[in-house]
Length: 296
Ligand code: FAD
Ligand code: MG
Image 1: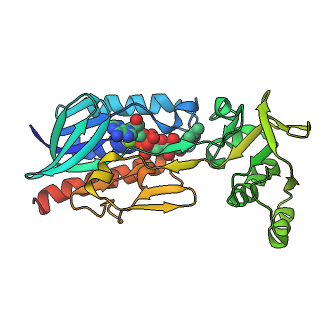
Image 2: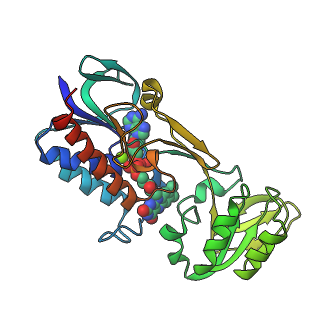
Image 3: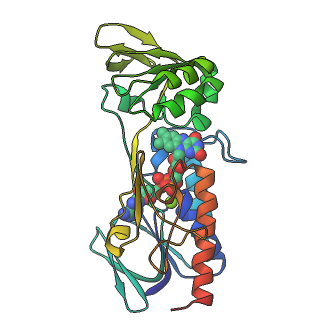
């Protein structure tokens, strides 16, 4: 069967793209590998009407509502490649399937690579975070550490004093110059030098020299990478920056390849659930309009 649209990624962005298409009674296939980026965190914050809801519940209710429309199919699988076919695209999946559609929406999110500090990965999404807007408030104005991975730690270190007493842990990753020190001082940020050996306890930072500093929470910047075999196979342009890359899109969430759209974290830096839902909605509308107004 030739679907109208295949959506790769069935989380916030992909389901938001699906909803307007489902409501136009278009034939949809959603392919999802079940690895939501925020699966390490229990609660999600900052999405209007769902502030503090369980991240899994927001995704589950969204999926249930979208699948209630009769023209939507769900496939639990991973898309491994794609190629142009007559009137559209063929998408290969790791279960050996080949699925065809006239339009594609890429909503596969990103993969985070965390700093290799023992004890950090186990605390990701619980005591170690990257987004102050998502998890800063719950630290109750407590002690916050920013674990530097590069000079970009300046960004988190300067933001975070709004959420608690902030210490920048340089961990030999960069050395602030005089201007940066003045900026940090103006925001009341303390600076700690020395290599970090491990995170233990709640969020205790152990240094190589034996010192231990206790925090209520830590922030760090992972490398966030788009891993989209479909975007790669079709030649969608992917930008790369210091924090990772994103699939290039225009204001309508169209990629650089005709009839392929992208949304959510895969197509914007610094994404969030509400931004994924907004961008996903735009991608779904744009894919629908392209089926009507530019059918080839
Ligand atoms: P995702 O939610 O990551 O979903 C992508 C989906 O696509 C996954 O199911 C994945 O398995 C699937 N997929 C990927 N590749 C393929 C493929 N090839 N084939 C098939 N399926 C594929 N944001 C907030 O707004 N509030 C918060 O409180 C918050 N907390 C967070 C906590 C943590 C620890 C992290 C890491 C992030 C948090 N975020 C939060 C950010 C939020 O998780 C993302 O912005 C959001 O999940 C992006 O949605 P998305 O649909 O683009 O991608
Ligand atoms: Mg999605």
